[in-house]
Length: 183
Ligand SMILES: Cc1cc2nc3c(=O)[nH]c(=O)nc-3n(C[C@H](O)[C@H](O)[C@H](O)COP(=O)(O)O)c2cc1C
Image 1 (cartoon, protein in one colour):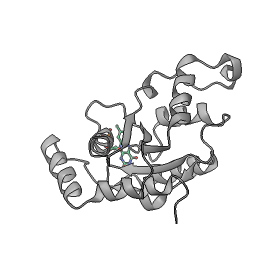
Image 2: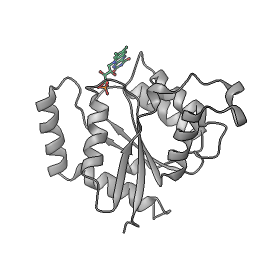
Image 3: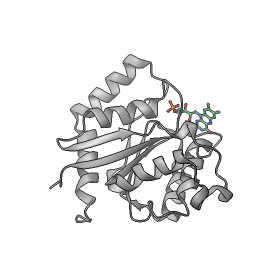
């Protein structure tokens, strides 16, 4: 049973126009269940580098904008590539801005991953999110490899996943846990 309406905010760790992680988030957005809105964050690439001197009353407007979206979200979806066996710096920077604030704790999170590789990044992302007290919902995580596929190949993979109900099942699972549903 899903309570609607629900607002999910999606953070993509890749800034590439042709990002496969973004394609996956777009597929989740475009095929979300009735009453569930997925908005992809467009702020990550414009955030200044985190500096604790710029917190509190010195917080940049764009950081307040990001924090307000996370606060308003019923849940957050992350998708990111792996860079040099690590988490992309831009995404980590966005998360660093949220560490000392109160938006992250207990906010439900699902992770969507668009590669059959990148386990280091996934492990690091999971550790950072846990440390920030996000409420991870591992049963909703999905992994659909779009890596190395051209636009048509990516569409085929996404279509197959949708036909098998992978995206729908993951989103419904995530949404059903948002109000502390049964584990
Ligand atoms: C600078 C750089 C470093 C990378 N390092 C790794 C790596 O350590 N491990 C890995 O599996 N892939 C690595 N990759 C490949 C990306 O993680 C992979 O292409 C990813 O799917 C890209 O995501 P995107 O399509 O959303 O941009 C690297 C790519 C770049 C550009």
